[in-house]
View 1 (cartoon, rainbow, N blue to C red):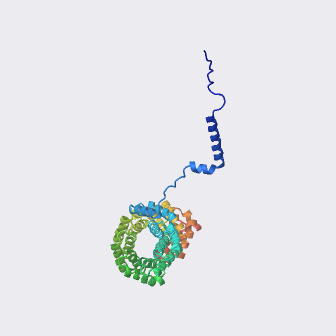
View 2 (cartoon, rainbow, N blue to C red; view 1 turned 60 degrees about the vertical axis):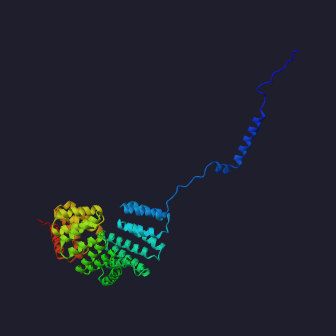
Length: 406
């Protein structure tokens, strides 16, 4: 018997059960994702990890290491980061101010100091650092020829130092800064007060180089050069790497008539700090006294390159050119000096007089430029040589005006 079986149809018609299950599951998942999008995103996308940041202490350590390596610009940047990381870390402010002063960034040092004194008004180290910043800013203004602004900063320094000593009467450095801020104002009525402050500083810490420096400065202002000399030398014994002590000693030698010793001391200052514009300016001044205009020019150029805003260095450069009859370059340098000084005084009248003389030496038609400067000089000084030169210049200009000049 034959059995007829029909084979099954493959594939089957219509969807399979498994396919239906998969489609149903997919639709359900899609609906869940749509309804709970944020939760799903957080579950799928990993949480980003923040880049680890250095602590204020770590940054301060890096600053100290950079400072030890002589990378002071890098150290200042690390201190800035440290302060940004923790604006309450008083010690970092103090260290930052000290380094800014050393790097001649006195404006930033004052800014940091004013922040620090608000942050920690009962900390004598903060007020001491502030006094150093104000002294440096006073020196900067003095370099610019602005005596009034300089004296204001020196007064601020004395006040800040006194606040430090009111907190800690045995803070010898603060006492020294108070003496410095007082004596540098140049008021003879304050000389005794400055000396008392400096006396206390060296009594408390005999080996404090800063105390010795300002004690010597007080004696120098009083014309007591032998006593100043002793203080400078004792200060150098305590800290031979302080260029200010070598520069002060150099001017002390000059005050006693020993220019060769002064030149040696300026050289030692440069050996300690090769970028010290004040030391090069001092050397230029010494060479002018010796009548060596080319060497004066060389050192004055170095000073002005290191610090273009030092009025007296520009003046000395102009004088060096003038003595070599190089009137165009003398005029250029002296104009910079006169512009920074603003007005003639007994201390800077020689530069005003020399600029006027350079004008008419170059061309008598420059008398309209020269005559007002000669008149300023006559109003500003009683120095016989300068007065005689100014009068002679005015006579020459009057002859030009009358048409009788040779």
